Image (cartoon, rainbow, N blue to C red):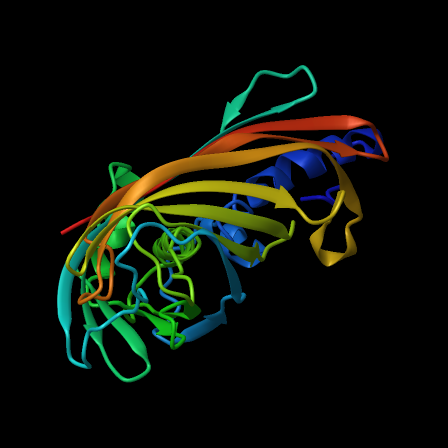
Amino acid sequence: MLSSPHIPRKARSGVLLIVLAVGLTAFGTGCSDGTESRMETDSTEPLGSKEVTVPIPAVVTTIVSPGAEPRSLLRPEYPAGTVQRVTLHTSHHIEQQINDQSARDFSTPDLTIPMTAKTDADGIDLTLGTVTSPDPRLAKALTKTSGSHAGFDLSDLGTITALRLEPAPETSNPARAALEQAFYQAVYRSIAFPDLPVGEGAVWTVQQEVSGGVVLDQVTTATLTKRDGDRLTIELDVIQKPKSAVWNLPNNAGWLDIQDYVMQGNGTITVDLGLPLPVAGSITVGGHQAYRDPRSSSMLQQTIDTQVSWTE
């Protein structure tokens, strides 16, 4: 599309922004450029069931306040073979405006993903149930995803170190991309525990690099508001900042200057140390971004809102 002879040369930078804007929606959730571009294709051909493993950047936890006594280490305590049934719901809404043009909606459809988690010595394996979406087109594509698999590799501290995705053989391109984005959102909204004992009222931060076309520094502040045995209620505050002043476009297509970037949010989750996934909770992160094409001074502005929720 960028090289089409029907597009005037002086208009191409604006077209570039339009085409690449969809890719920008992924950077708040850690999706790769390829994930988002596949999502926009119309192909319904199945891509096979080959498993893909994506490393997740390491986290650094820092205790701000250890909280009240009694204090103890927060560690997952489930044995291999533990089974849990949960439902993941994700939404990702975005509006964008180029220069003084009318704002356009580039939101991706909401997903509801029931799954069965089973633990083993290396992490968590997930078998997906019937995935649904209110969007009719995507809902139809999702009908063949039942039985797909995903998984998380974990560190000794319970932190996710890798995401595994293995769609069912008949999963189409749009359905696969939707699942990828949903699980990336879940991974980057997960919580890591500190490596020292804490009690109720404890506050700690979790710093992590969110990979994508724009590399982000994400800092999550966690507050342990309640503990009832192994069940923990944790409030989360999330802030993301770009680690560079520019976005280097894929395929050596140049760069966009980051003029403004504000992404933050909060929520509350409930986790059980005897179970592998959150049992309840919701986290919303949103904000606005502005990018400038230095070759044409075209401006792209975006307003983004994402939400990840868990229910048993």
